[in-house]
Image (cartoon, rainbow, N blue to C red):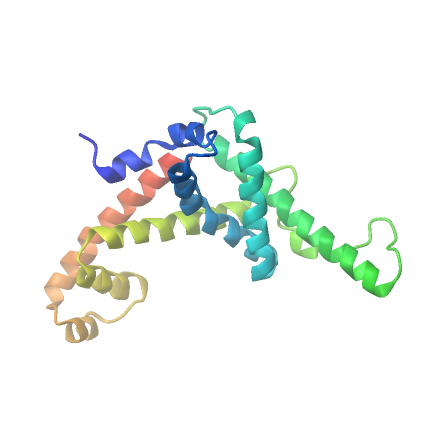
Length: 209
């Protein structure tokens, strides 16, 4: 019998199929929860402000809703992620074009062909949707999501000890004093949760592609 976590991680193709039903609110909530922060992070990394990044999230979600019926669910690893990245990249580019048009209106002149401040888009390659820019942001998203899932499954004090030791680099003696846990236990917690985190990251990578 699959665990709830394993089940949720193995249902992406059926989730994409369910998204074709606009009235399936639970599926859309799941999709929004899985991908919203990733899309927003890409927009912020590209150089948009928070308001513009939120607009990108809404635009991408709306576009997915409009086009999901045309998307053919495939077994190809990463196919949907590449499709979603393209949708996001185009919406980000639209925001920079809007900035450029607004600047033109305020300065009351037309730009020369090819002129315009698109420097922040240099990392967004039109011919390679899975370039370094996207991949770094995606791996951050996977790690953050894995940490959140791990935090829900283990005792709060154990997760806090792991976070302080493994991610923030606190000395074991200080953690032991602050949390009331002996040093040996902290080492054991760190070893066990590191293995669980790695497993969670791998499951997420297999799930999302």
